[in-house]
Each structure stands twice: as C-alpha cells, then as structure tokens.
Length: 568
Image (cartoon, rainbow, N blue to C red; front, top):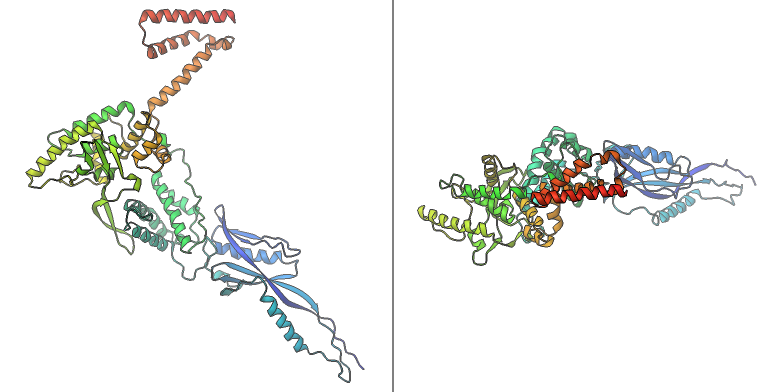
C-alpha cells in the first residue's frame, strides 16, 4: 500500500460574520463617524475607531474605513461588506476568520480509502448557511457597498440616513413653510393652529437672509453640510438681535421637521444658542418703557392729541392710551369693537385681533400680497375680560358720540359691531400703521423718550407689578399662560427703583463708616465732617423737619459721635 501525503496548506474560511453600525454625530463643529464598540474581537487594536471631518459625514465615513481596517490588523478578522439598510443605517461586517489545515488525503493501491472533497465542501457550505441564519446580520433589504464606492453615498450630515432622492435644503425650508401655512388655516382652537403673524415672521426673515445666502453659497444648500458654523456666518450680516432669535428658532424647527420626515434623524443644532455680544447686546432691563415719573405726561399728551378738533391725528392717540392702560397687544387694540365694552359693568372684553394677513404663492411660499381682516388672538389665554379704566371710559363715551355723528354725516348706519379706532379713511388700523403713527406721536413731543408701540404693553405690566399686583393675576391680564413669561419679558426695573435701592445701601454704609468699629481708621474718620453733612442732606430729604429741629438733631448726633470716640 502506497501512501501519498500532501503538504499541509492553510486556507482562509469565512465561518461567520459580525455586524456593527457606524454612528454619526457632531463633535463640536465637526462631523464624526464612529464605530460601535468592537471589544468582543480579541486583540483588537482600537475597540472604537472614529474619524472627524469639517466637510461632511460622508467624508468622515471615508476616513473611518481605513481606521477600522488598521484596528483589525492584529486579529484573525477582516473588514467585510458595507451596507445601508432600508432604515438608512450604515452597517459594516467583520468576517470571522479561522485557519484550517487541509487534511491529508490517503490513497492506497486498492482504493480502499478515499475522501470525497466535493462532499466535504457541500457539508461545510450547509454549515455556513446554518451559521449565517443564526448570527446578528440584519435581514432587511440592503444596498451592497464597498470601500471603493463609498464616495457615491449621499449621507445626511445630521444623521445616518442615506437618501437617493435628496432634497436641497432650500426645498426642505419651503416644504416646512407650506406645512406652517396649512396650520394657519386650522380652527384657532386646534392645538396645531399657528398664528399667521408667526408664520410671516419666519417667512420674512428666511427670504430676507437665508435664501439669498444659500443662493450665494450653493455648497451649503444641503442639509448634510448646513451646520452651526454656517448659521454663525449668516448672523454676521445681521445686527438686530430679535432677527437672529427668530431665525435661530426657525432653523431648529426646520431641523425638527426634517427629522420627523426622515431627512435627518438627529437635530444637531437643537442646543445652538446665540453668541453673546456684550458690545451691542441689550439686557432686558435696558429695553425702553415708560418710567413711573413720566407716565402722567404720556397720558396727558395722548388726551391732548385726541381732543384736537381738526382730528389731524385721527383716533390713533386714543388707541395708544387704550394700549397703555390695559396692556393690549397692538393687533388686539386694532380689533377692538364697541360691543367689547360693557359700560354698565365697566368691563373690556379682548376677543378679536385685526391685522394684515399675508398672501403667499403656495408653491414657492413667497409673499405676493396682503389682505386685512379679523383673525384669532395669539393664544387661547389672550381671550380675556378686563376692568375698564375709568379715565379711558370717559374719553371712550365722548368718542362714541363723535363717531355716531360722523357716520350719520356720511350716510352710514352705526352699530356696536363697528371698530372703535379708525384712520382718516374710516378704516380700522392695522398694527403696522398704528406703529407708524406712534413713531410720529413720539417725534411730535420732544420731551418724550423714544420707545416703540409694543413698549406700552411692557410699561403696563411694569406699572401693575410696581403697584403690588399679584403675579398670577398679572399673567392672566396680560394673556399669558404662566407668570414666567410676563416676568421674563415684560417686567422692568425703573430708574427710580434702582436709585432708591442703591441709596439705601449707601446710607447703611455711611452709618457703618461712622460707627465705633471704624474709629481707628484715620483717613476715613477725617472725612467725618463731610459724612455728617451728607447725613444732614439725607435728613432733609427723607425726614421733613424745620430748621430749628434739624439743628437740634444735628447737635445731638454730633455729641453722640464724639462720645463714641471718647469711649473707644
């Protein structure tokens, strides 16, 4: 019997596959691609390789693949296929490699022993099939990729979704605006209802700043590379803080919309905040409002202008007074009708808003015109019944009689469904026109501080708070759900309050300077006479005394101080 032995030969057999995801996230302003933990692979060089890119997630994935391959060098495994499943997940496979010695084949002359290699191969293939059906490979429909064609992937920079029908970022914005436009047509009691004013605020600023920027920088017209740093670049050309705030809110909502509709899976700008600019930034306390000491002067000018017989300024001054005395939003003032007042119960029911309503091209969402009319209030809480200010009531009754006479003169029937505040064309004001009239009113009276019409609402809230109104009641009167909104945006500290509070501290300091605990401080005590004079001024200001009593009190204080020095 003759035996023939083959030389042992090592062959690489794919026994099993391990599946891992590539996770995508932002790392500061960089795009990061990161492998799931590979610690179950023995001798792995780096159990969680990652790569970053300033360009895109696509570029980060390109950089990550060689790092995964390098991490597997000292293992008995190799990088296999790279897939995208139907949910958009990026998956890579690691082949589990075993080295198997090819068994010797024995032959004898009588052919008594023979190994059927093809049969062994078939059996082994059946084993592989069994193993693959029980491993962790996803069974979804997948797109097979390779390290050579990864550059063809369209990976969203905000997530791990790959889209074959990718939309431009500007198209996503327009789609979002159309979605908001549909919400403005819902019943105002619906939770999904959106005020047309809010939509116009978003739309106006997006068309003014974002669309022109994307047209100038088409490389960023892709949600996959539109990042926080791009937003900062857009904001460089904007000075108004409120405009930046509106745009930032818009961007966050757009990204949330994109996430909901599977354009992205993570809103990576959700934590984006406006960068503080101490040079131009105003604190809440610095925003303009009417100081308490000036309140009567403002009211006097409003009454004066309203009562001008020639009616040069129409009903606008009375509308300003209504806003200052009741804290209305401008559109609520414009929408006020006579039926909203109950002169017997002295109540004012705020239940309507009159404003300009934008008209859009529903395909491009460009504004193509305006309409005017009644509309719902900003929030359900905005519908409220207030106590009618008695001073305003007297002026209002006078105004009603004059309006009735005017309607009779022009041959129009008057009813309590008419608007209270009307312009020279006998039409109700819109908020923007009322605002322009207010600017003219302030310029006419040189001794009034420069504020905008919305500052009247702020002034009302501050005035009520300073006069002891409870937080809960003030929030309801302002039409807010919670007092935090009122406190955060509408309550201001007057100059008089700041002065008085600081003077209290300074007076306390003065008393401490004169105390016996500081008697050894020579330089400070040398100024005692000056401090005494300051004390006398304080006594004159805060305690109304005649000169004789004041002289006696001063003498007593001086003796007390001298006695304290002797004792010390």
